[in-house]
Amino acid sequence: MKVGKLSAIFLAAALLVMPSVLMPVGASASDSNEKVEIRYTIFREDGTFEGVDSVSPAQADAVIKAIARINNDLRLLKAALTPEDVENAKAILTTDIACMSWLKIFAYLLDRIEDIIDAYITPWTKISVFSHIFSYGHGVACVPFQKSLPFGITRQTYVGMLLRPIWWKYNSFSYTLVRNEHLIPPRIDFWDMIGRQSGFMIGFIGIHMSIIRPLMPDTHIFIGRTLVLVNKDLLL
Image (cartoon, rainbow, N blue to C red; front, top):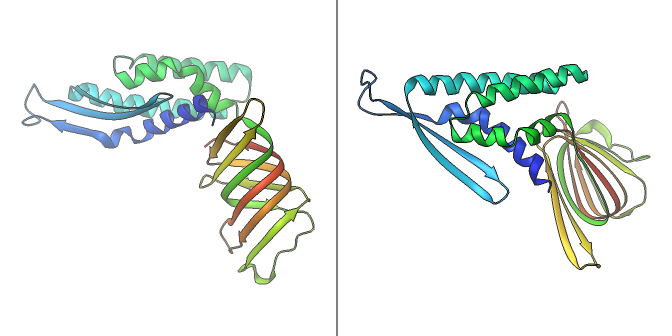
């Protein structure tokens, strides 16, 4: 798994839920010593860090407004089309995070700002050979010369070898896990993708299950081994 980019995506997702974990502590709203507890989780390469900060109501309000600005900055960054737009969006995002660096989670976000920006503007692609794959997704899976069964409310399953190429494109509720084995030096590698993704493979051996549903994305499951696999992260 590409930890840096995936962690950046988790961090960005944490910004979306942070307002729900603001908890007032103290006697009453009229108490000048009233504090607000902010609870948050940071996903790091060396593990998970859970933090709690006590701030004033004014600071808590500033945090909520900052989250709204940063979410909007991320949308602008994703929508940027020209290099100038990208640089402007990056500068605005960095400034808004830097203004809140007095809080631990924003300081950590500022430290990882390049990873976050890279994750939002540069989808990553993994290529592997002779790998095991487990892939579950909702969307489209295309196998040349394969015909759908009638009425669109059917299950299609096959077991064995398929030499024809397979393409797929999944929506956000999807997951792919891949295991690679290496002889020199001997080791086993794992990587995965969560969310929107597209893929291509040749020489699949295993089981493929497809559930075709009207008015909803089809569900596809691949469990087996493949000669060549290319999987591309399409981000959130």
